[in-house]
Length: 104
Image 1 (cartoon, rainbow, N blue to C red):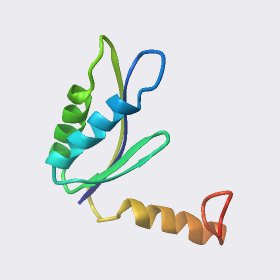
Image 2 (image 1 turned 120 degrees about the vertical axis):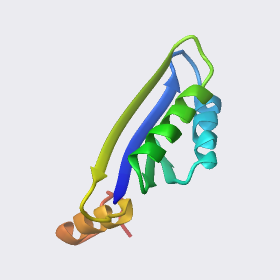
Image 3 (image 1 turned 90 degrees about the horizontal axis):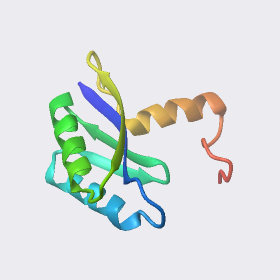
Image 4 (image 1 turned 30 degrees about the horizontal axis):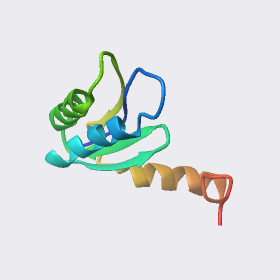
């Protein structure tokens, strides 16, 4: 089984959120997950939904603020193991090139 998710956690406020987002990302290090942060969130991979939800909760709780917004999109593929990288590779095979505008 592979669970892949997109997690976005941020305080609701004006100004830079980088410090608080960094706290959310750092909280993931306490869990058996792999992750990659991008401008819109963090892609997380793990073997179980339980581990994913525990990591997402820790990330949410790590952010300080009167109001915190968390979005979690989960792909719980229960019959096969497919990594996030393999998903991107499949799209790139269909495209015939890298899945970005500045492809090299």
